[in-house]
Image (tube, rainbow, N blue to C red; front, side, top):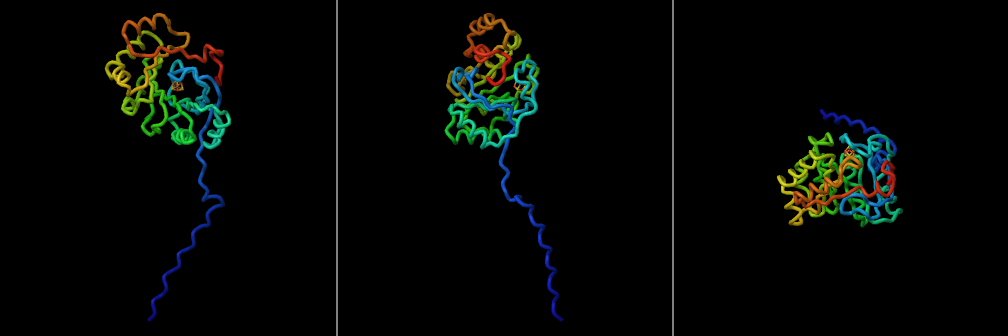
Length: 243
Ligand code: SF4
């Protein structure tokens, strides 16, 4: 008796047209603009800003609440091309919280591959370890006055390099003392001294802090920090977007 032939498996469903095409990665973008870098050791430099929409935090003094929602869906390639068209070789990827979106890391890598110097402004609440080591982080540590101090991801400090800066936005004396204690207890002052951290930045909440008093506290404590004002808020109207 002959063995019956095994049943022929049904042929697979044909793939819908275009299903084999790779989906081009995208980000939701609030704005792309060309301005003067207003904070950090890069302050004063012409810079292209790419502001990614969305943030999981809600700092009490946030000045970019308009970036929480909305935005336009943009491919990463179109953002790189726009930066090329603007022409300035310094680009800052900001938000919102840019690193809440995994494609932000890809965008940074693409910009670096095209020869841009890339800054990332980040809240300090999201893991920075996947960052490309060629970029420069400007990472906040949220003081109590922000209402978001519990969100600080302290393990991020282990991933900062000589490229990177830590920023404290200070709303009052309580914030200042918190910052001073963090700098000393976590050895950030030593890291600036030995060059394993680029800078510590102190940024007063705009129009909320007695600047002379803050300067006096810093000098009195001999803190190795850089006192900075948000330069763009002095050049343009403090509430203006896109600068
Ligand atoms: S992390 Fe930045 S964007 Fe988000 S709420 Fe705080 S200040 Fe605003």
